[in-house]
Image 1 (cartoon, rainbow, N blue to C red):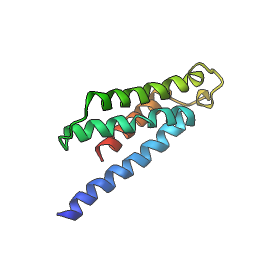
Image 2 (tube, one colour):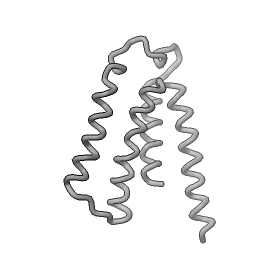
Image 3 (spheres, one colour):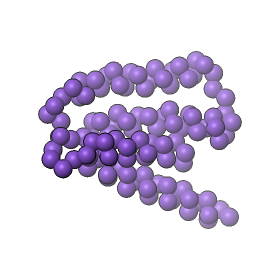
Image 4 (cartoon, rainbow, N blue to C red):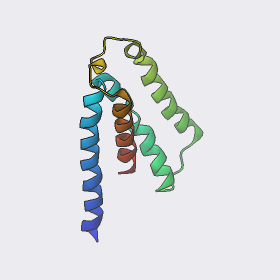
Length: 109
């Protein structure tokens, strides 16, 4: 019984590692880091859904403010056309989707 639960977690963490490599191959490390900050928000969301944990509105506002702060702080890299992610053969949509799936899996695990 415990082995099955551990197997599921091991598969999720393995998938997360593969998704990290896919995303880093297609987007820059700075953009990856920004999206990776969403793990805090997804973890709080899944703890509310799965564990029935209750957060106050102040805590939710603090989580959202944290996410907005990260996005505002990183704004200069969004407008930089010289990012390494713009190399030929890269697919930023695939990289962004991979990192968002990884973040969601991380919140679930």
